Length: 254
Ligand SMILES: [Zn+2]
Image 1: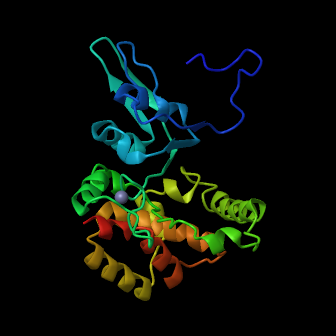
Image 2: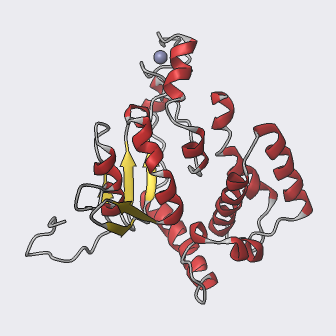
């Protein structure tokens, strides 16, 4: 893409890309008469951050679905076909509604229920289905802002993450994938077996949340990672419960 300087011709840090919501489909996923990589490829092995997710064009976001799944994107034009790598971690942020205050205890939200629903429904179900962890972040109140309690430092978190990654490196040292996210059916079967108790909890969630087969696999992968962070060989009830909880946002949408 000609984005690297002569002084530093090699990428040595994982990329972090945060395109504006006005980006075109070709800009995001790649395109053009002579196919060029888009932001999802520039974010390869790094992070693609989409702020104000519902402001992106719905059809542009939907084109990302397949590449998200496959880690590669193929662009076909009359003159040429090109395949680019795009194994990125998708991170998105959004407000709960247009004014940003929906659900806040102050009651400041001025949106109608209809406008809240239409704002959220701009993100399609199939895209949401591919997002493993959805967390609602309530606004802090004054006392919480004033609190002098020291939050856990990033370096402490980093240490936990590194330990979990080390476990995964060991687990997959012979395999084709490098982390829990990359597990295919055979590895899921080997490393993500659920005890009867865990399977029972999954069944309940499946029925009450209307989960898809895709989200079933994804929940197991997240639960495996939570178990790794906990240095637990087995996936236990709290791990699976936490992984399911990151999906419950779908409830408030439907
Ligand atoms: Zn609002």
